[in-house]
Length: 211
Ligand SMILES: Nc1nc2c(ncn2[C@@H]2O[C@H](COP(=O)(O)OP(=O)(O)O)[C@@H](O)[C@H]2O)c(=O)[nH]1
Ligand SMILES: Nc1ncnc2c1ncn2[C@@H]1O[C@H](COP(=O)(O)OP(=O)(O)O)[C@@H](O)[C@H]1O
Image (cartoon, rainbow, N blue to C red):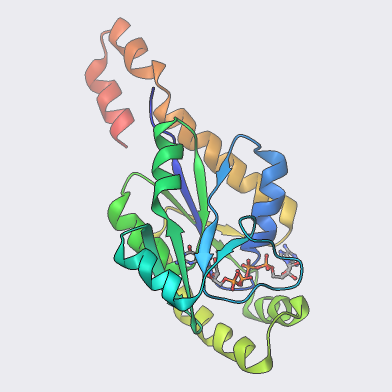
């Protein structure tokens, strides 16, 4: 069985990663979602094991020490990290998985999974990004300012990614991401190698499949 594909959706806070991921669940039910661990306090309505695994600082540090995290990052005063075993297990079962994580963590994942597909979600404008963070109403003024200054730095890291998707309308962003998922599958179709061999164009196939 061939391994699943690792997708990483990243981008500045407030750009709509969570919203787009929720919408994608409807469009792409076969995609598995990684649930992160965090030391951040739960927001109203957030559930343990659904939105995050909520951890104390000590518990989180223990996860780092025991190598239980694929990557972790400190973001605006809290730790966030991706549980390693779940990602490995999902991929080895041939299923695709998507991580919704901030930019530093995504760059660390890229070092370990060069074959992963990295998607940067962009706001239509800086002003719209600000409106979305403020409009969500989950942050204090100081945290909003901090997140906006981090966002400006994060935008400079776009070159680490395979794709940039503008989140103007949620449905448009979702269909662009679905198109990326489909395209990445077409590149890796298992039967292609065999088919090319039948046509005795194996060297051409190698070039296509390596891209
Ligand atoms: N590196 C890393 N970042 C994460 C992880 N989980 C969530 N994040 C990111 O941490 C940032 C803050 O998340 P959160 O406090 O839930 O706020 P929100 O995503 O802006 O609503 C966001 O950019 C998330 O994508 C993770 O496992 N690793
Ligand atoms: N395309 C969009 N158009 C308008 N508002 C959006 C769009 N995408 C997300 N939002 C809103 O922006 C805010 C931040 O979205 P969220 O998914 O929490 O961002 P992130 O997970 O990147 O921090 C939310 O209030 C959400 O409803």
